Image (cartoon, rainbow, N blue to C red; front, side, top):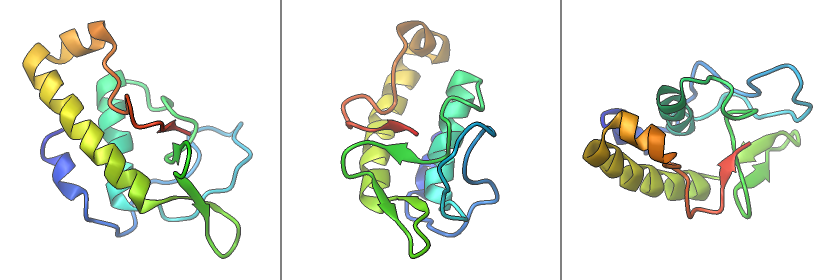
Length: 117
């Protein structure tokens, strides 16, 4: 997880993107930037649930925008805010251990005002 957090500035396209299940009606810009996909993947490693969010996108005040086609885009400002929170969360995970973090239900996005879509 620590190595993955070093990819904050990588906005190239990831190889996975969009909704995580067929019941999501929103359209998402493709491709998702690597820096956002990495956070989603870290949350997957933590929760063990690929569908911990309905999409590889952040949701909350000021987190979203639209591209020229009207597709949902997570703003990079929200991604950077999430990275700061994930770094704090990761320090806590290292301190209490992964099992302890799960037991305490530590949320990597706590206090950001955002959540996974």
